[in-house]
Image (cartoon, rainbow, N blue to C red; front, top):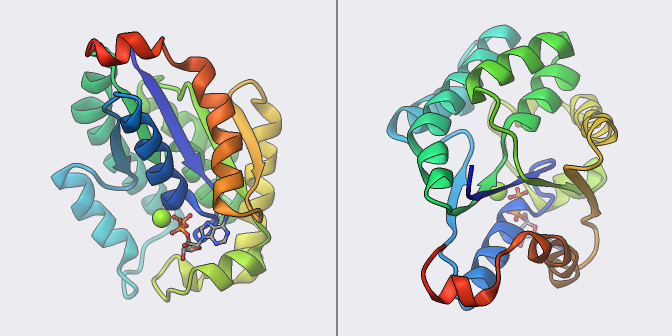
Length: 212
Ligand SMILES: Nc1ncnc2c1ncn2[C@@H]1O[C@H](COP(=O)(O)OP(=O)(O)O)[C@@H](O)[C@H]1O
Ligand SMILES: [Mg+2]
């Protein structure tokens, strides 16, 4: 795969969207044309699944929830991510498969190996080049992000399990996943992200020549 897939992970409120947009802005200034997507979403089907998943009244079992996230992901991978990466694009993804491992595996308690197997089926093995886990305490995440949708109402213990789950996922794949202290100011977090991303970029000359 010629392109670069960069994913952002962490609790809601940790600063994923802020950092995706800041990184996109910096890449654009250098002449790159990054593609930005969010999960679940970014295709018509995936956005409909997102709506189902976030519906506060929906009664969804953990297994059904995990499969819905992966159905949305399968559509995204095959219709957006793979085609973009095959043409050499830089893709920034606000959440990806690690979210399902953290939330439905560690958070909801589905067997981790089952979740990893389903993620593998949905992505058909597509793994991010680089993943940033933006870590903040649950309390701070709640302060930054107030929402009452279905996922949010799962309670504090749930989010503690998700946070610890992310640490476990990162511990297993240290070469791919960069853990960042996201309690720091946004521009400092961005600087750390940029130090990693720039190592994966082709020369700025090739960006201006339109390869990316
Ligand atoms: N490093 C940071 N320090 C303080 N506030 C932040 C930081 N990053 C983001 N925020 C603020 O916190 C809120 C949630 O950030 P956002 O990027 O939407 O997080 P996420 O996409 O992970 O839910 C926003 O109001 C944003 O402006
Ligand atoms: Mg966001």
